[in-house]
Image 1 (cartoon, rainbow, N blue to C red):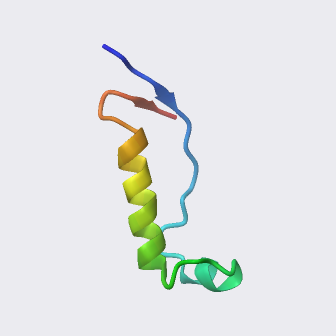
Image 2: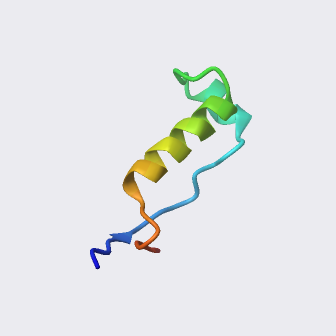
Length: 51
């Protein structure tokens, strides 16, 4: 079984202020959340160990 150890931190889901304060390319926190989830699913697999 090919397992990776993945280190993660607080992703700030739903933080509307982040979009406004960071001059983000995203129009809303929903767009940011969707992109975070997309990237997460591309990298982290169910067999991986999260820290």
